[in-house]
Length: 452
Image (cartoon, helix red, strand yellow):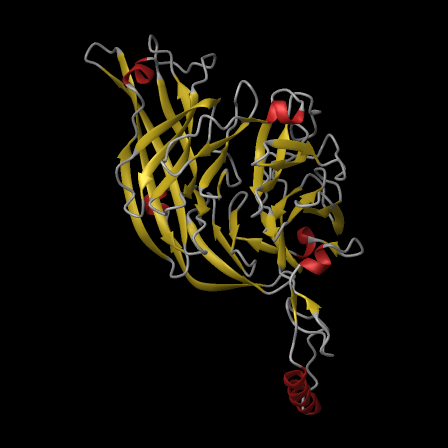
C-alpha cells in the first residue's frame, strides 16, 4: 500500500500549537485518529481509508433484509485486525429506507450515497460524509427522484469520478388487435441521470424498447432493467436487461421457454437518446443483475455478468464499437468446474482480477436460500478459482450482496452466515493472499451485505 511521509519541521510546529491548545482546553477526542493522519513522530504511516460495513436486519423471515439497513465505518487498518469487533446492528447508523437500502460509496470511501427504497421516503436521494463508527453526517440537499422513476428505483453510481448516478425503470403493457389476439408487449423505459454533487436531475428520458419483430411475435419482451454503466469513450450508456415471455396464443405468462441471447440497451450519453438493443451469441439469460453493480469498465471494454444462463453464468465483453465481442467466452461453469454457476455480485480491481460471489447447483440450501461462495477471477486469462481461505456455511447467503471495497489490488468482503458472527476478509487479487480481519457481530435472522 502507499505510505505517506510527513515533514518533521511542519510536525514540530503543529505539536507546539496542539500543546498550547491542550493547556487551555480539556476536550478529548477519545484517542481516535482519522485515516491518513500521522503518528506524531515523523515516522511514515500507512495510508488508510474508511471501510463502511453494511448490515441488513431481518424483517419477517431470516435473511430477507426487510428490517432496514445499518452501516458502521472503521478504517482499513482496523478492518484487517481480527481483534476488532464491529457491531452495526447494535451501534450502527440507520440508513433511511423502508427495505434494504441501495447504497453506493465514493471512490475514496469518504462519502456514502443512498436512495431510499420503497415506503414514505422511497426515491429520496441523500449523501453522507463518513466520520467513523456510527457517525455519518448528512451533507448537501435531499432530492426525490420518485416523480421520475418511482418510489422503489433501481439505481447505480456511474464510474465518472463520483459525479453522476443513474436510475431506471421499465413498465409493460400487452397489446392486442381488435379481435383480442395478442400482438406484442410494449416495454416503456425511463432513464434518469442525477448530479450527485449538487443533488439535481441532469436528464430524464422515456423510450419504447422494442425487440425484433420475430421475438415480439413469439411473446418475448424486456421486463426489467438495471445497472447502467458508461463506455470508455463516455458517449454511450449500457443498461442491463431481463427478458420475460408470454404464450402468444393466450397472453398468459410462459415459464418454460427458450432462453435468448443476453441483451443490453445502448443509449447516447449524456442525452439518453437513440436507444438500441445489442445481443450476445455467447451468453444467454439476463444482464440486469440484482443488488450489486453488474458491469464494469476495464482496459477500454465493459465486462458484464449474466444470470440465469442455461450453460452457467458468463462474463461477457462489450468493446469500443458498442457491440458484444463474441470471441470472448468466459464461462464460469467451465472455469470453476461446477454446474449452473450463478453470479450474484462481483467487482474487479484495476489489474483485471476480480472477486466474484456465486452459487451453483451444488450449493447447500440454507435458512435463507442457496449457499454462496467467493472466487478470484482473471478477466484476461479467463480463469476462476474458489477462495477456500474464506469459511463457508450452508447459511452463508449472498443473493442480496451489494458492496465490495477496492483499495489498490486489495478487495474487502464480508463473510457471516445468516444470524451468526463472521469476519471481514481482505483478498490481495495480485497474490491471492487472504487476510482474516475484524469480527462481524450478527443478530438473529440478519446478515451482512458488503463493504463500501
